[in-house]
Length: 389
Image (cartoon, rainbow, N blue to C red):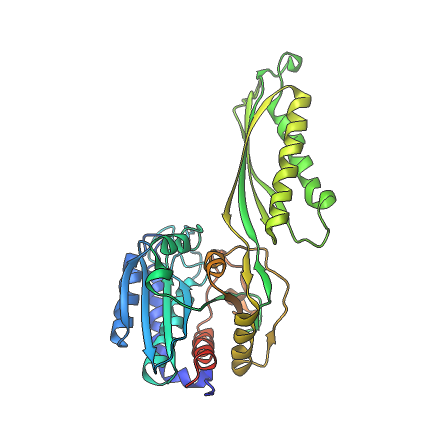
């Protein structure tokens, strides 16, 4: 079994940096990644891969076969940027107002392209590698679009793998776990239908702010008092708007928020508790309320065998590998792929200093160029391990 190290990518490093910086200067939001997809497809074709464009809208798939093996694995990178105004000062800042690569998808794309070139030119293996460049991860819509476009029927695979950078973790660190690695995200909305009135005569109506405030307080008791303390769930109210004015008590209010959970059972429990609390509070105030609860991202669950394969590949690249890390509270639509096929989602340290240590989605976050060869080497090593000659 061949060992692949980041040093094997030193001759490619500047090219990978150039690709990432180009993508960073020209960010595109979900399902708008036309320029990005064209660049990805052009690169893959130049490496001699079979290329399929327009999968799930703007998705790109590259196919690389070597040897006579029947095994096929998929490696996935995301391509979309975020609707954030960049506040960085480096020379490759976003040139598009209000859009930036604040999550490192530019780096993810460049790393997977680097691995595709290396595997096509320098690394023998036995089987098929399907390179998936996915649109619209940030809104949780891209994986579904590709699956609905029969991605897995057109390009059948046995396993699928995804990688994401983790700012604040040391450069070169890899971490993952069997089971839930990323939480689900469910968005809820409550519309309270109370009775407005004059602020000087509150007894004549029902103050929607008061009702809404009780709901906010009650919802904070769900995780604190109704769930296992170690479950890792989060319930957040993120918006509270009313039709009130300076001297007018509001007759309606809208609450919006976000729920994170690590298991489907916890997610359903939280939804049930929310509905019961809402019913009790609105009944007590003799008002009505509409309630919606929509899960945008399901839990990302790693299968045992692919996770061990990813861990072993990471150990060939780095001495800093954590194989049983705590689950993350953020969400990933790689979850849909790993629901359909055995898979593993692994995290790679982006560094702790400066912009490399800033939180994901921060306006001054930046992917670490020194991580490009590390991530590309990981992908190549995983293929060498999983599809040995």
